[in-house]
Length: 69
Image (cartoon, rainbow, N blue to C red; front, side, top):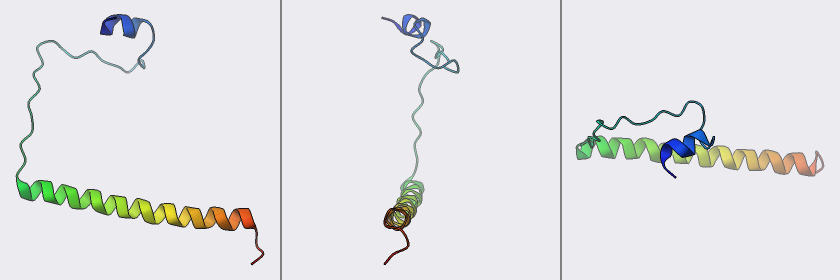
């Protein structure tokens, strides 16, 4: 099956758009400083998500066990 057949069979969302044949992928080149800064943002996001996950786990435990100690 080609992409047109897959699309016609409803396997993609209505917002799906075909890639133009003349489009060329141009890789982005970033310097080390930019990459390290982006990595730091990702690491901070992961730490924030872990903290939220821990907090939600505590709330779920409290909810499941009730108000009794």
